Amino acid sequence: MPDKKCSEPQPNDCVMPVRSANPIRARSLIRDNLEKQAGSLNLIHSRMPNIKVFSGTSHPDLAQRIVDRLGIDLGKVVTKKFSNLETCVEIGESVRGEDVYIVQSGSGEINDNLMELLIMINACKIASASRVTAVIPCFPYARQDKKDKLAGGEDKEENKKLAKKNYDWKFRSRAPISAKLVANMLSVAGADHIITMDLHASQIQGFFDIPVDNLYAEPAVLKWIKENIPEWKNSIIVSPDAGGAKRVTSIADRLNVEFALIHKERKKANEVASMVLVGDVKDKIAILVDDMADTCGTIVHAADRLVEAGATKVYAILTHGIFSGPAISRINNACFEAVVVTNTIPQDGHMRDCPKIQCIDVSMMFAEAVRRTHNGESVSYLFSNVPY
Image: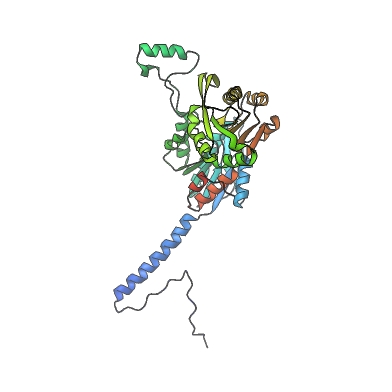
């Protein structure tokens, strides 16, 4: 004899409404119930698609650290060059309906790496990925974010004299705004979202018409200072240029110490003409903080100026350690206790050549940003905290 007991209703079962004397009312309740259930299922699927993380060739170590933190495997991708040096990318697994993240930093052969990133984004987009996010720890061409008022170079003084005699607008630089061009290229390639760290100018976020999450290395920097500089309470945070004043005041406020800044004047790119220190560093530990260092002329001159002003020790903390040209030899010959950088750019080779260079791992911040973005959570927690 069949069991007449009714099975217990499951959470996802459609619950029939109680019988109503009004059949129109009963049908309305059933329809509302079904629509509500379908809506909740669609919400779950839209917020929790499967995730795939791919790595470009610029920084595979950082990408591996990110997926290790997330507990997943890197996606399969093959990158090669044809004999005429064209870049070819083959995505080795299905990305249809997936939430795709592509990790590629603006370092090394920047132009090749940027083109590789654009091709990877486009390859995933036309393969029906539901969303493509570019994780760009160091944003390429970030320093080309505006037109200078006057053209640079050795004839700068002559330009100033001419500008006094004629209309100033006639002597504005003809330099491109390349950061805006890169933003346009990423959007046209098919990127839906950008995750980066310490943009050279935060206004670059406005170059995009898609969401941009600009993470900050500041929480990791504060953690390093407290753990590795025993006398940090007797320190002073110094910006090597006026443009970094906001950055150093934020760090100084959170450490409850003083800050100073150095005003520099350049005659031409990568060459600093003069430096003026604003602030008292005598008998204090000076901590230079900047978003990036390329040839290191600025921070080396700044360190010499701080020692002349009476600083007992000088540290430099940088988010992006590019270290091109004579940078390594300059650091080796400078008076730094340590030059601390994050791993937004590969640093293994630099650390081998220069024992003063130390590295802060920020992969956990990118991994947490990816996890929160994937789950539809806020990333603002990362602006002031280091995830563990």
